[in-house]
Amino acid sequence: MRIVLIEDNDSLAKGVVNALSDQGHAVDWLSDGFEGSQFLKSEGADLAIIDVNLPGLSGFEIVRTLREQGSTVPVILLTARTDLDDRITGLDAGADDYLGKPFEMGELAARIRALARRKSDLRTGVVKIGHMRFDRTARVLIGPAGPIDLPRRELALFECLLDHSGRIVSKDRISDTLYGVGADVEANAVELLVSRLRRKLAETGATIRTARGLGYLLDDGSK
Image 1 (cartoon, rainbow, N blue to C red):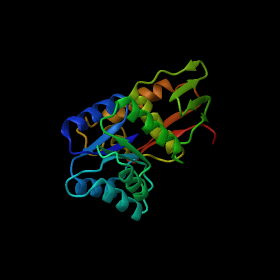
Image 2 (spheres, rainbow, N blue to C red; image 1 turned 180 degrees about the vertical axis):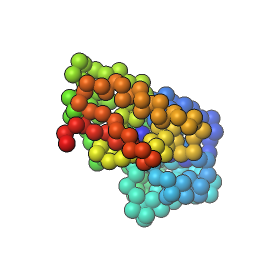
Image 3 (tube, rainbow, N blue to C red; image 1 turned 60 degrees about the horizontal axis):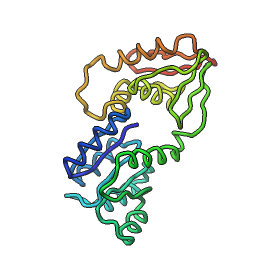
Image 4 (cartoon, one colour; image 1 turned 45 degrees about the vertical axis):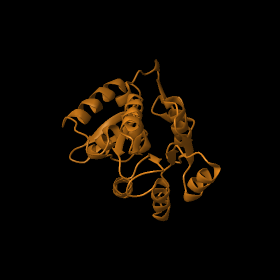
């Protein structure tokens, strides 16, 4: 999942980025409200975590702007202001959840999973593709011979391709989803990941096809 974090507390932001990256998410971090709002408008996200008190624009203003633009990206607001009126203001502005500071990273991760389950393009339940089953909630891929062990980057790649099943996904889109927009990664990083995942999907009835110059497509072999 590609997550945008807008938080001006450097130490907190670095902790969130490290924790979420360890879970296989790509995190884009911005510390200014206006810049964060512009980034969300231009780049989008699978989920946004936004502090309320920010330079430039407040978290409330960012969420209102998102909803006025028609964006349905799930939003978690972070703030040390835990008064009921503030929570109501945030939720009325269009936020999906509200987490008071300080918080445990485990709780943030659980709230992210809960919001991900609500997204229409990240459906809950088990998806069948080829001779495999993918449990979206548990994030477990099961092949004909049992569970397929996928490191977090390969799992994120599989989810990205699955979410666009039957459609070509560009290399840039995959890179942004796995590493974050503008991340400094080796030019062949995506190709290497695709190659490793392709080998693990051998004999499963599904394959990753290369559309030269365009990107990659997950084919379940049904056509």
